[in-house]
Length: 194
Image 1: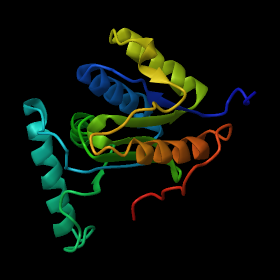
Image 2: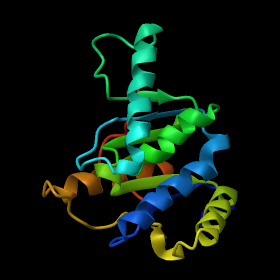
Image 3: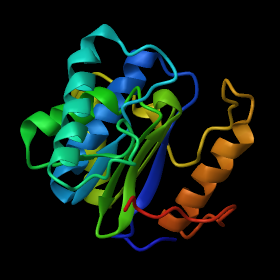
């Protein structure tokens, strides 16, 4: 049995409506915002960006251009990959909230530990939370009218459009093992972006 203050990793359940999936991503980021010290998002999606997030997409690319002009991004960097988000800035946080449910990649870190990850155009999701954060997240989900079953403590066993559901399971298994010592690792850990 884990210690009462031990973090746990939660994943999206199978078969959720895309609107529910997007809302879970956003509520998780809102619940973690004050505890996260670093976040980034990719301005790429495997699906067309929903119309309502197009302004945030443009803002993300503007952030990348500003980082390039400011010298914190190299010219060799892919302009849409690993766009750093300043979570203290409400406008930048709004960009993360808009894009994370639809991107090929978004991460949030606390003290060098990955606490939020999104990928596969929003279908892959994990969040590592303390018991207090989990309670706050579940309360946020309930207040938004989202099903409690939207989150589960094991990664879903599903395939992706590319047909390599095993890759997603291996990645989520490794992250889950790193964040939840009760589950054995299946592949190498990832490091925060440089």
